[in-house]
Structures are given as C-alpha cells and as structure tokens.
Image (cartoon, rainbow, N blue to C red; front, side, top):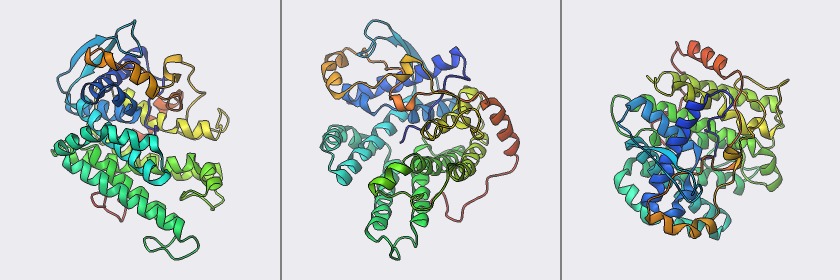
Length: 366
C-alpha cells in the first residue's frame, strides 16, 4: 500500500509499542522464511495493522519467541507468529509483487522488474492459496491503470471510462477499496461482511490520501491525480479526506474488537493523517480533527530500511532462521500521533450508532 496505515508513538504506552513491534517482527520473520532475506524489502506498516486487527478479531493461538536478525545481530527481538501473521505476510508479498510490476510497466523501472521476478515464485504459491484475493488484486489494479491512462491520453476530451478526471479518480478509489476489502477478508465467515466493508472504506481513503499527499508532485510531472487542476486548498483537501476518514472510523467501530483496541485506534484516529500533516506542515494551531503532533524522533522508528545490497550481504543468516525485524521500516512511515486521539476515538464511537451510508457503487463489485 502507501505507508499511511501506521501507528504513532505519542499516545500508546510501552506495552502497546512492544506489541506492535512484535507483530511487525513476526511478519518480517515469516517473509524471510518463505521468500528469503530479500523478501524483507516487502515489509511495511500497512499490513502490520491488518495482522493486529485480524488477531484482535479471531484471537488465534500465538507462538512467541525472540531472535536476532541481520538488522539487529546483537540483541534479540521478540516476535509473535500465528495464522493472521502468516496471512498478512502473504498479502504483503502479493501487493508488493504487483506494485513492482506496475512500476516496471509505467516507468520502465528495471529494479522493480528484477524484484518482481524474484518474488514471482512466492506469488505463484500465494495465488494458489488465496485465489480470491489475488484475482481481485490483479483485475482491480489493471482497471485502475486503464482508468488513469485513459485520463492522461484524453486530456480535455470526453473519457471512455469516466466523463471527468474527478469521476475517474472516484472510480479508481472505488476499485482500490474493493481490492483492500478482499485483502482484509482472510476467510469467508460471519465476520467477512464487516471486514470487507471496513477494508473498502480504508482503501478508498488511502487512494485519496495518496493523491492529496502527491498533488504538488503530480501537477508538476503531469501524472494522473484526481485533485489536480481544481485549485483545492489544504482546507478543501482536509474536508474531503475528513469525510472519508469518518467512514473508515464508522466501519472500524462496528467490528467486535477488544484486544489491542487502543493500539488499533491510534492508527485510525491519528496515524492515517501523519503524512498529510507532515506534507502540508499542519501544526498545533491549525491541525484538523484526527491530526498529529510533531514527527517522532525515535531513532528506531526513523531508521531507513535495509538496502538490497545489505540484504544480499546478510543472506547467509536467512538459513539460520535468525530473522526478526528492523523495528520501524521506512522513515516516511515513522512519526508520532495526536494527543487528541483518544477524544477522537470516543467521538467516533458515539457516531457509530448509525450504520455507514452506502455508496451507489457496491463495495462488493469491481
């Protein structure tokens, strides 16, 4: 995904932070086990949130341990493993594989093509185990690419897939919501409807948040962006994103979660705004609801991920099963949370007495 679904450190205690890190370590360990050291490059905080959420819902039996790794060879790091962590690792690899293919097709990125080739054997296995999710990922990303390319190729003309760039962006956001809705459904059961709805709303928000954060860059480069050319102010963007973040919160609060609920809410009510507030330099005076404070200075959470060369250098440790996690992967994912997260969480809980409004487009169809 895009690095928006991340917990912050300001409003969670040390126990919750350790819990967050241990799940992150488990996903990293699982990626290394099935894909080798280079598979660690897939690691991101977005799917760590998925694992914690599924663990809260299903409460699987956990395997706990501690181990050193290439990133932390001197000190053992705790980790947890279970079916939810395994699933999150599979979806991490699947989404990364297709992201690399997109980068190769769109930009001719040879490094991305090389990494996609590396991941393909693992993706083929994941596709056998999770055909429903992979079918939707493949078809959905193709349609998003087609919509965006159509806009770029027919600027100023009536579009075949949507009449305006804004409508094209809305359709693309809908499709990405459908993709994430399927990713959040680990298995079809009594909870799949609520998980699919939550994933759908989160996917729409992520797509639009990514567009908002990249707006200036996309306008300069001429890349597709549904907000481009509209003269929107930062306040306008906040209002649009605020509406969709409320829908995410409403869908989230309908899930019967208990364990790690405060940690999960730290993501929903604050972490999802970190990049936006950093991009537009929103401070204490003018920050919107659900926003954050200054970036975290935690060295671990601000550290860069290992490079491909560093991963190659550590490949021998892979076979020794000493893999854990580099506790905070990308620097652009590592910041802090709002002091008002609890108040926002409480307010949203009150709002969720009414069911979410439904879009005209069904979340269940592409």
